[in-house]
Length: 249
Length: 187
Image 1 (cartoon, helix red, strand yellow):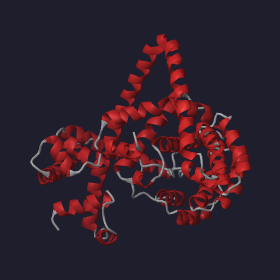
Image 2: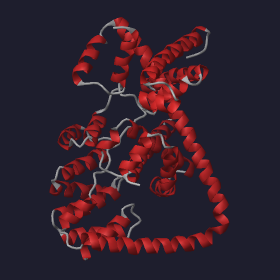
Image 3: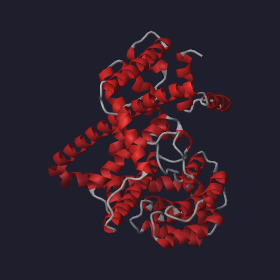
Image 4: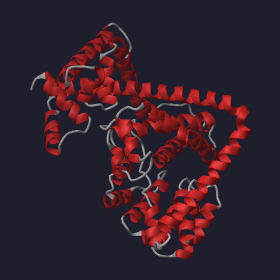
């Protein structure tokens, strides 16, 4: 294998563009001291290039932030008029949304309405700033499985995590995995426990609990929770309002 | 804009789309972060930018295609996770100070610091390398652009030319890095 071919292989391996068979071959080759030394050199260069790219991206975002702040400062004098216009636009949007909701969901069952609004909560623990080669915790592996919609295997791993500092994350994703697997009844008690503990996933637990009630056909409980969410400052308040409108058609 | 077209725009390095997405959720995110985590506005912005970067990188690497959620949900979920990490780090730091113990970096932190130094050295070497090499390498490894796309954007003959250049650029980068190290620059 010449140097160019070697680099191609290393590229594919590090960028995750390699088959399982090729991956096994690569891992065997990495037992070779000289190959491993070359691999380490390239890996550092590639990680360094990505590091520099990430810093450039951060600088771009900082520039966008600066421009946004300047725009906001410049606009402050005309804020009264803008608010008036925004108010009218919001009212029009709200009327349109209610109308659309009526058109779209008028004849749907609770479970069908839930299906319209249900989307899995993203599984993001750790993030992409760490290299793929670093050890992953059990939680991170569970999150990867969850992200690839392999909920059953994710659930198995989540259940092996000790209840420590990740207790809330673990409990939320166990409940959510059940729901995503089409077993909302199993998630109800778990979401309720999360809501009672009032932690970081409270708003998510409330929203998904309401949808779980809809999915199980318990319209009364769903309505109660949706109304609670709608009247709170939850990030799901607007969505809850829309679901309630759909249910009332 | 739909999730699908957003992903296409990101894949094509559409800077306007990055700016549009950034501005679309910026205010909502900071308001939510200030309320939910009692952080400062600057901290909220810092975390929002980190979330944007992670989102961008995950779109580029194809990870986001498997997720049935919209950009807002994704950005907020990453942001929550980052704010949560920040909060835990603050608690840990404060409890160390309250215990009266000096702050001793643990092995893992030392490892990350060392790795950071190495990456900074490569970054410095990359600056010395300059364009077009720097641009080709960043486009390929960070923005995950294909050889064909790089050839088209930079007006090279074809993908094979870019592939050959990329190889030469990496060799040159390696040599600059080695010179830096042998010349006494700290890693």
